[in-house]
Length: 158
Image (tube, rainbow, N blue to C red):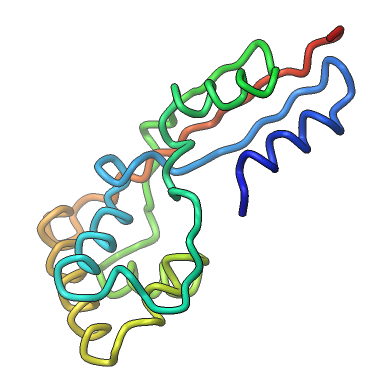
């Protein structure tokens, strides 16, 4: 995925006055599920899986200023970013479910998890369970998973 190419092509094909909107997860310090996973991978696994191509920072557009600036650089106007800070993952009941959701429902995190040795994968899963319990008081509260929605408009005249 090439975010700059996506934004430029979106600008090119939008009719004047057309609006582009997209969402991105907030950075890991705010998105507890991703923080649990990324910290666990860094602590007991291998975050640099061999064969996984370089990609853009997953959380770049989770920063409202960075997201709106990227749109402005291309020529979008009337740019806005809103953080949905109250978003929560209400269906995840434990750290094991979190591991499974990230393994089955994401692309890059999935590949990082699949690229671990059997021992690393077991250690990551175990640590995620511990971290989930610590953050959620053993499941008594939901994981905070805020996202940022950003939009911009193609000018009616250029």
